[in-house]
Length: 88
Image (cartoon, rainbow, N blue to C red; front, side, top):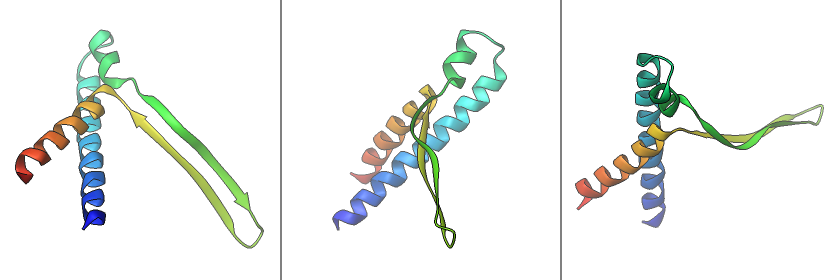
């Protein structure tokens, strides 16, 4: 049962981040250069850049990069709040 709760939490976070990023990209393209454009379109990246391990028979690529912007963080919180409201 706990595995299902973790999976649900991950799905809520990913969906919230995707919706927030989409809305931020739309707003960023709609507004001209300035404070509003920068607020919605600037990203903060954290993670590991892709690294490749070549074993001649097998080639593996490792990496994980998270990109957050203000709308994606807002989307995560809104999705979590909405999920908690619906789940009660």
